[in-house]
Image (tube, rainbow, N blue to C red):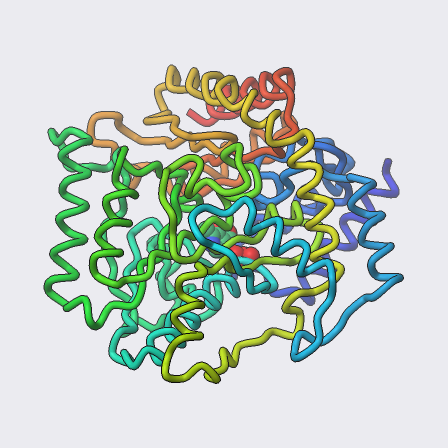
Length: 452
Ligand code: PLP
């Protein structure tokens, strides 16, 4: 009602005065009542004007089982009433141990142990610090460089952010450039003209080998990669590429860190995608977001038994991984994650696998629109990439705000889009029905059509 809209405008004004947001400093995007999200229910959210929208990005790839799940709210209340917190330094709690057991059951290969963090950035940071620790204990202090790729997004803490490969992440920010080696994005859509995808995969693999040979494997500690580059625009690597990169890492004693902050906990229909979707067994997997469906900030790293065994048997079995966040193994976060995992296992994973082909097929029809260069995706994540000209695929001839304009039209029509310059990424709650997919695609089609 009118009262809601007024209260919404007040909140927006207060935010303008007192919040620093990850938005352009002088920009007005997001500074309207429609940016204020007041409520969530299932796949829907309601904005400051009282308008109900499909939550296209599921928060930020995280509301996997949907908004307003009473079971999740209740378990958080119950756990907070029982034990709201304990220090992770020499004390522990039962929910974190039980969750680690269940995560290890789902994880590929010999990944057996979990270190919990506060989110995805701190999970990536933890995996990298663990690599440093591992190589220090093994007497290889020179083996610390990190391989990362164009199009990557691994977080916003200093070292994790240094791995990012999207242009705008580096426009105004600094990073630990001396620790990171950047490789090409595995983006088949932007492969060299006239090259087929198999040859493109060979080119990426050759680049990977060549850079290792150039630098020396004895100086490289880890490769970090998303199985599907999410924020880079849902970039699906060529077939077989991940397995080949994994094998090269193994041959060169380089740890393979699979960043599954987006792809785990159902986005691709499984708890983890590395093993079940891509057939690889990483040395570490980072996760966050969907582990609690966004109801509590939690993330973590799953670590291979082999690495831990090597450390136990080293010359320094007393060496300490002196890395602990206050909220490591938070009991409320772990309790909600356990209940969330029940929901995923009991209903949502099977549903996500069942509707994924329909979701992809419906979105693919948007390629009929002249502005759309490609629609690609897997599971319940997809990207509609706009181009000024399909031949040259050049997005830069487009006004950089094309995604923002599509988002504005879609918002009016009842869909939140998370625009990434020229790309619209769709990753709704995994509970979305076929009818709701139809609604989502119809709105997106109309929103893009109005933008031409
Ligand atoms: N890794 C990936 C693949 C991500 O997509 C993100 C966030 O979007 C992160 C890491 C960082 O996670 P967080 O924002 O929870 O710190």
